[in-house]
Length: 259
Length: 377
Picture 1 (cartoon, rainbow over the protein chains, first blue to last red):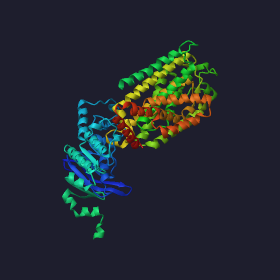
Picture 2: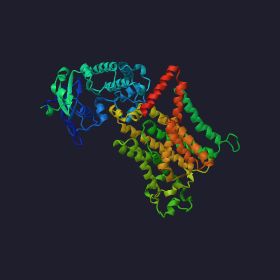
Picture 3: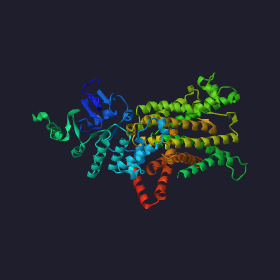
Picture 4: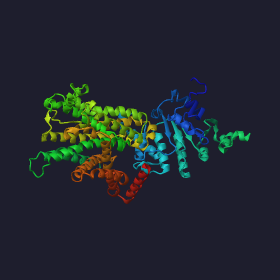
């Protein structure tokens, strides 16, 4: 522990992370950490750096400065996406991205944690009875047991989102990154997604990015507000909603104009 | 379903490996006899089918379009061709131990890279390893840099053009534009004898069966599902913990090795290999076979390679000018009207009308097919 602010109990810890896209700082000296088994919601106006935060953690974007520590002491900077996934970080994208030409069950099977995901071990991999049961249990909990044998491309929008959540569940990730899970969902689907995520968060840490404030209120314990690539404030959802600075950035009033 | 597929495969294998050559071995004049010419033609088609299977693995399953498979076919063919040239020995036109074209080009000593091809064992290894290694190195550099889609296709096309230009040069000592030909024996067996050609045909048919079993094993394994997943969404595969580059590299290498085997079998049966068989145009023709037959199915490429080339033989003997139009027309028609190819479309029709037991299931399936179509666009 080189830095006092890095508690031994944090699952992910970002220190002074800066991401520079040709002069535009998508993240600007961001400090952020999450506890084990925490459900955290990150909100913020467009361009605040929410998706970039997930990109940095999952290895899609390499920060120009700063450290990203996973678990006790694994530095994620410079690792490839599949390696980071193997370490135990799952990601669910904003647009549902399931494998349309594979069956629903095959989608889950592909994501399932395996001792090795190299080419040759995968060629010879066989499902154990335990893994089979696990797939069934997951299919049941995401409500797709009846559609296990259909192509994922034929699922509805909501079902695809649940399938993708199921995929990150069976991936055995300790930390799940979830980008706007309820965008484009009906109220009923939103409700179900909320229950799913809460169930997931009982066993692992979940970082959710969301715009839908009603949904945020429903699931969130702690909310982090990002603004212009840094943390604006952090706290319980009621406090955040009544925070003046938060209202300011959401309503788009600039401080200079106010003053 | 599983057992039915196995029986179909066995029946096809027996027909190709046993029945056809046996009919060829019948005495002259027998009404059931398959002529040497026909068997030889079939042998050529079967080498194309092996090649097409390999292309299907990388294109049909992993969704990576290679426009450079003529190169790998050519590498296998030239490797075997070099051995056959050396087998001629001093029986050539110039009565020299060097191949005739070298004498003609005033080469006095056998170039260093030709020497190991005197060994039959080395040649057989080279037939698989040379295209395999070239593909592995080429694939490593391109896939690792995340070059994909149309950019990968363009680069492979450039590879085909480079290979064509290189093999055309006389200074390469590979026979230049005329390529390698005039072979007399293969591993000691005279190539102009019907029994040798029959043996080569049987070897080709066996290799095709082996290639089919290999491809089927890959495609049906969990790794095969990773390939289809790569076709659907490469990024998602990456975040599932797999390296798409590694899987693509693997199938690209396997597919190149299959192309090499096809090339080697081709040379013995056709008797000539020239740079014209390995350039940009033949590489595109190979893609058309797979597209017409049906990519993403293993029977499709075999049917396509067979069908298209058979049609070519028919058309070019009766209407030589029409062939190129027919080939182009066929490609356009397949892309526009039957994107799943012959076999893919047949399977869909069977699933819609024959396979589904209840009308509800049939309706669900066609709904599903529509949804799949929409997402794949």
